[in-house]
Length: 478
Image (cartoon, rainbow, N blue to C red; front, side, top):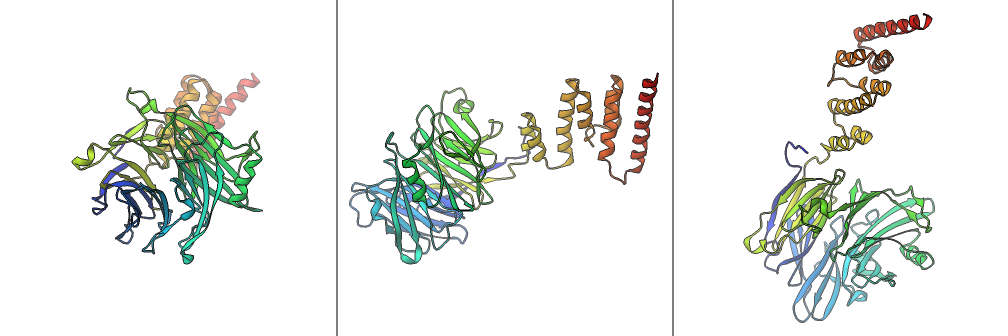
């Protein structure tokens, strides 16, 4: 696809971002806040909105070497959860942007937290509301923290995988207000499966209901240890999802509030599901799986080695490749991961010592052409930016109908064109093949599309159309 300039661009944001506190092991972002975990047990918070940073040592009082396994930050950048792994096992901490000391979550001691889902619709700076955490041993926990209490309100087990115990590696949650309360939608992934849960009431009630009903899941062939799940958020609502699975990128649209009952009694909130096979962008190498994934409105960002391949979600074509200015000592270890900041509309990549910012510049500008190439005309028109682009969509539709000898239909599309073909050129098309009926239809539809100020053209077309009608009447009478 031709581009005037790159849609995605990479800039070095911070070199040696851990300030000597170890190598970067993990990263999370939200609302211009970046939180890093390090190999020496430190959590470092950079607030690029106000231009400050601070760090917290989570290894204090723990024997031996400690490493931060995962960090999570809410979309507002206030709440942070981090899991540290060392010789004495795993511990998970909660901290707030205004705290100087973290709070250990004692009920999660020994559990490795791999994934966190925040309640985006209801979370505030003062309260997390419901949080779901997924662990390495296939359990889901619910937690809530009120900042004023300086401790968690509760931590409780919601769900446990018993049939096929696997690590939960990705979690997402959405809520919607309904007439009788709040409906929760939860998606969770393991290396081989995508699970979905939904119900009305509290999270505890929703998950308790699965004691008596079948858990809905999608299982795909293959396995990927770094399985990820992402929602693309638009105007604070999740509109589509993507799962980095062993078989490919499994993705679809999310339609909350208009569910259809599925045979197992669950409600399906996913539409237009598709699987993007890794072979499509592996350059002849079979099954090269990305090590990380990020999702924008129209694209997938796939981390493969030291570069990011940008794949159009609709056309499934690679449109750009992004490269990073790494230090020599970091090149051999590659880029570790990608993450996104839905609040700021930015993406980030990181290696062992640097943070890179991936910016997006008007990614929807060529989508009308992508949809047009796929003959998805309604979507193409919806993404057009000007009359000239709309003309090109109508022209393709008109020429397809003309080639199929559907001349009346072609006439209707030609009548909508204002710039790419002249009135005379279109008229001659029908005259040259003796299609008087189609010509008359074209003239009448053209009249419908003219404004009242175009009096000369209205008079000319009306006169011509009248003559064609009289010719037809004369032919009929004879």
